[in-house]
Length: 88
Image (cartoon, rainbow, N blue to C red; front, side, top):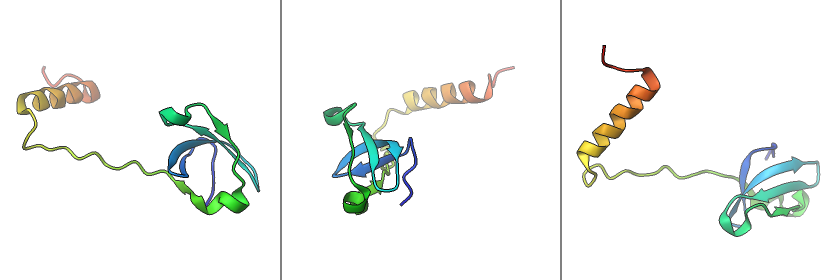
């Protein structure tokens, strides 16, 4: 796996950001609250297979139980922000 600076990865079940990468080492900085701003240097040769690309799960929205008028107001606000005012 190619480790690029700025990429988020999972290592030992925790999310990290790649700060520096070399041939045999990589420098990671913690993202989650337990390891925030903690920097570690795992060896790529031994820990390389355990460093995986980070994938954030897609948030599921329960439309049937959501408040429809608030949802419509949110959607209209998003449209106005992204495309300009739909009125006039």
